[in-house]
Image (tube, rainbow, N blue to C red; front, side, top):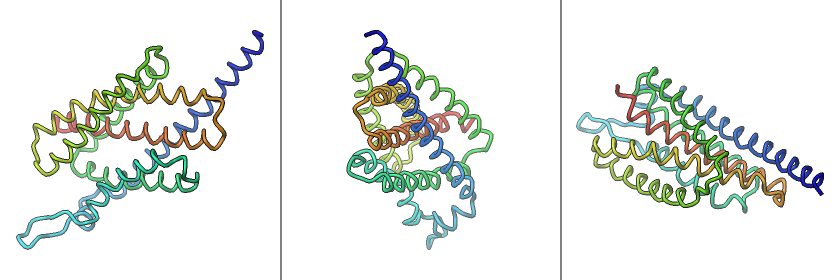
Length: 239
């Protein structure tokens, strides 16, 4: 009996390792795609050519492409997370790559606004905070479900507030959103890591189901990382 239990545990650990290898491959792949595109597009010339047009008064106005780049990732992210069971792996992969590419174009703006040194330092701070919370979420024995539910509601709140502040343009509101965002996205990182750990140990899942869940998991962790990075950059990048 003990030998059978040991074999089951060993098999479960192997499944979990393979699952998280896939999760992090998707996450780091998305970061790489976004980073390359952001670097290539992150110039004032690119911004003025594609994202802004000159008004009759001599000012600058966002182009339709600007709004598509800003809001299309939201729709794609929801599509992947809500319809992944019905979509083929090929369609999911295309949507995933499109999401990373669109986010890269969105992130290109920060390379124009912030100094490269500030972006680099904030990236490494984000990586450290993200890694720590991911480790806590994976190893903790505490059930994070209630905390995750509250943080998810807070995430929706700051998302709506962020869209509203896009039109208001208040620096104080942006600062408050950024502070709350740091706590929300670090907490959600731990919560989602715990959920992914549970999924990774589910031996009833088929190979394709595990691969789809790994892609969705990689997307979620990517979203947490990027949002944490942006929240910290707004706080630290102007120093």
